[in-house]
Image (cartoon, rainbow, N blue to C red; front, side, top):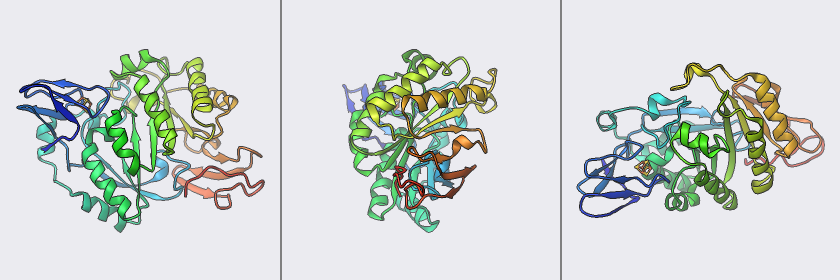
Length: 338
Ligand code: SF4
């Protein structure tokens, strides 16, 4: 256990955690919503500091990032716990694990330097903080992020975007790219399905865009919950008007078999995904992608000016037809970070 960085003691017994927008008030020996921060006599401790539950080399496309270091490998780490309780979670064995104190105790401590060495030794161009919400292992992530920049490796987060302003300010100088799971544009969805709020996520997305962190968004389209075309249209307008038409948006198909508490639903019909794709395109979003439909042509990158195929995707394999991030036909930029 390591003392947490983002909290304040309210009195001898109670602390307020300031790591994410839940701002949990935690009584003595209690834990926050994420079950990962424990108050011991007025001091807040992180249970998962230095305790990755998963370490893998992944294609960056798997996160997904389609416009950031395409075709590169990323060293991915994740820790136990999450600050959301999404019923649709597809990584719930990690994110919603119980008895975190006991489970973290038996995991090996891995130094930030060891993570860096593994990333460099395996030819990765970046380190991804992923699998579960990186906010809940942020102190550990930040130490690795600082080392990564010293050694010219990029840092990418795959996040629900619910971090506090205090944490966001601290990570932005070291954060090169982030994929935020924008689950819906409906506050009721966030409250009912995720036990959280939409507004702080939108506020953080705006800040990240202003700060010029490379941003991609993902929306999982769940039948009856987040498949409303009018809500999808609202997200598309938000991207095109408040962010930037060049922000890549991934529209993913839901599969009940791998979900935490939605196993009784049907898989999303591909027709709905295609309809959402067209709505996004019509709103002006330039780079829209379908997800979890292997081999679909809508996973490819097309030039937003002349429509030529620029990057072909087969699962996580890619074939580049562009010329240094520009369309080979009309030379328009494809808005790719190399
Ligand atoms: S990280 Fe968020 S959910 Fe966890 S204790 Fe802190 S405020 Fe609560």
